[in-house]
Length: 488
Ligand SMILES: Cc1cc2nc3c(=O)[nH]c(=O)nc-3n(C[C@H](O)[C@H](O)[C@H](O)COP(=O)(O)O)c2cc1C
Ligand code: SF4
Image (cartoon, protein in one colour):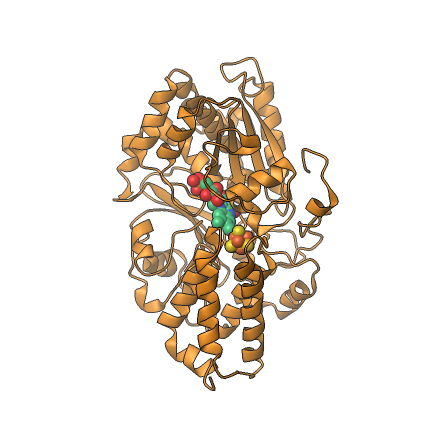
């Protein structure tokens, strides 16, 4: 729930203003491409008001009324950074956490100068796992260099990208790792207050984090009686708005403002929450930190490929033979992920793979040998993004997929930029007409012009992703595009 009294025009921004999703049916992209597996569940999702985009159950989509099961979880990297404990189950007591190697990083950090911790992070070459891949050490150095106090550390657990359920499982099964990573970060940058902004659609993660916070406070390493005595962490629960995953929108949401995207500069590292220096990192990023401080940045950087070091957790959707969470070393090919880890598709032929959510380029089957890496995927118009892997088969046409993506984009626009607010909805309507067989002359040209306008005049990275998606379907699926737009 919000940490403030809020005006009605703020409450009205949220899809889940009442706080409860009230449905176990999900309209996220992973459920959409799997709709043929349970048409009944999909129909229920289509009827659900408000629409819920992503309950983090992409491995069993389309999500039904049944309680969520636990996904398959495997470490497929030479050394595990974040799934070591998670692959064996839930770690909910401090003793078990310690037995599993927890707290060593924080103890080590307590004996280090903040500068030493930041240098270790820089040495690791860790890049943010929330989507943009910004170098974590560089971000920490910027916040550490700010003189303003107080400073804040914020964990982004909004995980809005349909297809991803990485942060959900990390928070449910290994919440203390997130708290430890945040506590180390607080020491490194000089922060006194932490906030975890957690997706309201993840009730089990909220419960798990609540208990972990209690345990950490009782043990004295949060909230008092230790070297971290000035540092405590509070939970803020999101209420169903994709844009709140964007860091400036997220900060507005915490502050009780209407959560539209802020214009930058100033950057949040300099003036973030309540105008103070703020470190915002993703959950997987924070969860990687204890390992790095414990084993050293160089050990981390020894894994992966240049520009993409260490491991990444990938979340595979239900169309795979073996959906689930896999921790892989950067540099493995997309084919390895799809065919070896996922075991290929169980109900049809692979037509494309989306990594990093619906607002990203589609990878066609002929490019599966591309290595998993920030630059490598960028070079083919795709991205690592947040690590959700959504494969789709012949049950989904490119026009249907595009319609779904633009509807999602329109539903989740924060409304700040006119081209995004109006353009995404206009394209959705055009695609609805095209799917109904009503193709107007000039549709193709108009579609391209709207997407260009969106890209030229939009404030946030959401629209870059929409542009990548559109460019990829035009480039990689030209025959399908031509046939669905044939009379234009
Ligand atoms: C539209 C949009 C949605 C985003 N959603 C998320 C999200 O759900 N989780 C997340 O960690 N980052 C998300 N991000 C990225 C954040 O703005 C921010 O870059 C990230 O939390 C920083 O953490 P990192 O450096 O550890 O990746 C989103 C960005 C955009 C533009
Ligand atoms: S591009 Fe869309 S979602 Fe992003 S700031 Fe502009 S209106 Fe909001």
